[in-house]
Length: 225
Image (cartoon, rainbow, N blue to C red):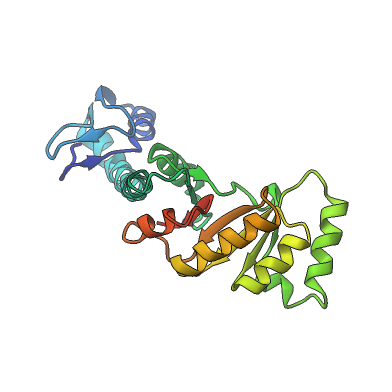
């Protein structure tokens, strides 16, 4: 198996394990997350045609899916570095069912952090939750008191909402689809209120605009790549 074009390749170790699972002999294996030139072999196995055909397409799909994620994350982290920013790239849970391990491993190899591996890791307060709550700001204050060990993340759509939830004690303000100018202005105001609040930028962030968002001084750029 070889790369059709220059780029970073991931999913190699998982592919090797699958080859061995069906009885193939792995005779060559590259390193996950490394850069490979077009035509360079990343994984090689030998065995009967029957065994090869039973598994090679699955391995190919894993390599392609994983490498796509790794390369997109690498492109974003490269823009953050160019902006001389300390922001982290965080990947969301928007993966195909059953592919969490593959997706997260590929993202980590690209230099990302995991936004959250499961819903129980933090308290999420999104618009989908607030519409069922008479007083969501008070609810956040209550959650802060009842669950002092958990981070409370609140998604907001404008500056006014963000300020409200900072005063309510939210640990993370996730700014949904703020443009870079609005986000930069909000970060300054948020820091003046509470310097410990974490500011996430989310919604439409990719390898074409990460540089502009990195310049806002947000702590985390959240993306599904």
